Length: 68
Image (cartoon, rainbow, N blue to C red; front, side, top):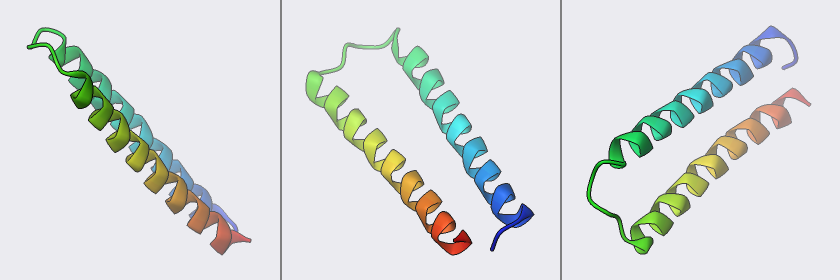
């Protein structure tokens, strides 16, 4: 599984990650003018982000396992 297909898959994951970061930045900027959020809401957002990052890491690990 070595070669351009794996590199292409990793490149696509990087694009998805950048898009997610950009969307998160836009959402954060949009919410600056809105009502104040509770600390619990902020922690819930952080937990959700951690879950997404963990899923992405697992996907990358599966691809690397197939490669090697």
